Length: 395
Length: 117
Image 1 (cartoon, rainbow over the protein chains, first blue to last red):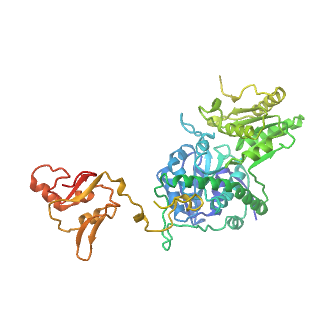
Image 2 (spheres, chains in turn orange, green):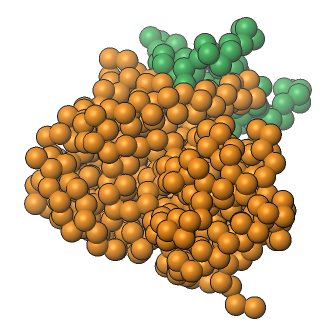
Image 3 (cartoon, rainbow over the protein chains, first blue to last red):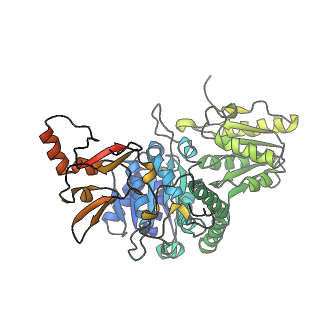
């Protein structure tokens, strides 16, 4: 029996971790992830999980412990945010390239400096080339659902890559919402038990993880990582289909919200997509044909599918909660990727980028509405007035 | 070198699935310095064998004799010479600083390509 509970995103994530009951969790507390590991530590202390909870002295050590435990054949999870992720950096790459199916809850927060503990996506955008599968979550329910699915995606023999599940710092992580918590036994049955193909603790079959790998084979191992990313969408969709059968919630590579007959579209990830849905509904009541594309799987990036979903619209606005400093027009990473995807798939509608919400700056429905109205003008004139707009920044 | 394999033919993630294959990887080519035997008589104390990080001291275990160096794997780190108690004795008796390629030592460290004499 599932139950409906009033939970903050972090509590929903901690609940998923309790139900998954991983062999090892290694984590270091950092705002706004802290209440996840705090809650999980309660579960450990109360004997509700069998997890070996490793309280380390830094995030570099947290990810290192995760790598060691995963190589030993354990099911491993961690949670972090912003500067904590940045401190993990070196080992984040090693986890992916060593093909260790570690699952991370990543509570998106602005990278310092100046120091800021509130939401933006500069942390996750830094790890986009690290070889992890990256999932976005609009709310606590999705953070919970995605984390459960992440275990099966990561451990699939065709994938064997670590997965990061994002939710917005404070907005989602500390915002209390109604979350459907599935029956413990159903979640356990869904994730199953982890049967690692290799283990450093398998004394009958001694093997090595992470050896020196020079010009003769390193490149081949990178090519294998590409192959795993190529396989991932099929696995992600199969896991989503199984999840839908079991728990009656539909997930894909992205969500199309009233996009089918839309004339203009906004693309925005995580919690702001929830706000955008409200705006879409309001504008639809005015008779304006607006739609939303909400990315869920950011890595691997579903370029072809997104281009197909946007093909019919006359203008596209991408909303980025991060800046890729010095990139083309100092745009955001999501825009750069979607603009390239549309152009390379032959779609030539006007496309603009709207950077917003850096360091936790609120994004208000009126601002998203102004973006849609800009797009109607762009659709009419056939060109955007400005390629990149820094929404609501003071001049 | 053996025929290199393609990305579909090798274990993922750089994993090495067989044990004991470091012997196949010849690291001697990394060496800039080389250990050689000097004039001072070896006492076969096996300190060099004990400390060598690459297991490159060749010994006759049965007769407890130090035989020489496995130069296919020796990286020339010089630890054997540094821990050699005979070297310590020679240095003490010499009452002067000795270069590490001094012929009077038991284990000398010479530059790769330098004549042993």
